[in-house]
Length: 359
Ligand code: CP
Image 1 (cartoon, rainbow, N blue to C red):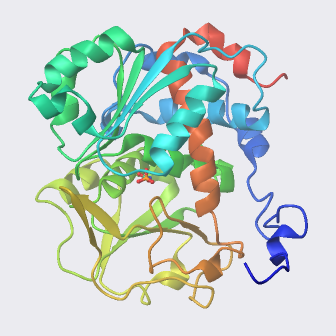
Image 2: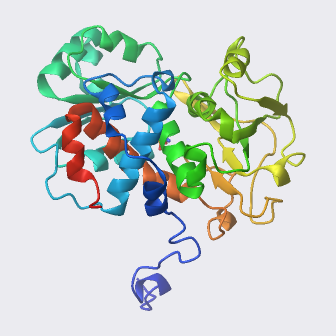
Image 3: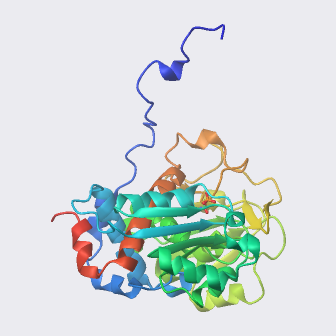
């Protein structure tokens, strides 16, 4: 080591990203939503595999509980003390696994974590049904990510504890969609009640035929169709929907439009959701085309940008210090959404009072 000068970032306290600090408003969301915790009973001792399992009231109450936890994150009596979460992630993950584990730790529980199926009996031919039987013996909730969309359904056959689908192939990622909506609700609390006056135009850059985050988000957005002017799917390639999926979403009341060029629609969008990765098998595909966002992009004033996955060249770091950056908030809020979800699945609803902020 020849240079004895300290690098600038070591010369003072840790830097605060002041330009976007404080833009989240969990208190405003908490104040704006009716308190109906009985809706959360629908989650008690249930599996969570698909966004199709949720109705509007359930999503709103989950986000309300998440906001109450975010407003007052230190719990007087951690409700999951003594409970064990098993996280089995057979695909790479930063946000999902760590936010689930952070959520469970913050609720007072302990964790068994598997990040490679080759370290389990699966490497010796053990069936998923038998693995699920063992999980039921050792844990109270399972969180599974697997490239094979059938795995979570196979495990349900024998599981005796709830399982959460944290991404099954290209099929679904329902808790990511909950985190996406939580970010949108905090930005625009009226949207949760579909009474914000102006309806939102949401742009989804991605491929609903191959991207599980997009599929689950569209399902949840359809529950709030009265607050959505339209969802514009921006995909440079051809038809991005699997046969029948677009029609099914339209039957749920979602107004959908396809665009091949981002520039044609970007200045009109209130929410820009950008996802360029589809994890397929043991690898990933990126959205083709040269779609990208930076601080010179023609974003509408006040528009927010969400990005659920690992960043690639489609999202330039120059956007980080702008008010459009809600992707950090989206990732941070996932912990509170997952705390709300986990405690609702495991706890009886009266215990939710323990994590609600005082009136
Ligand atoms: N949202 C999401 O699935 O991100 P990770 O791959 O980092 O878990």
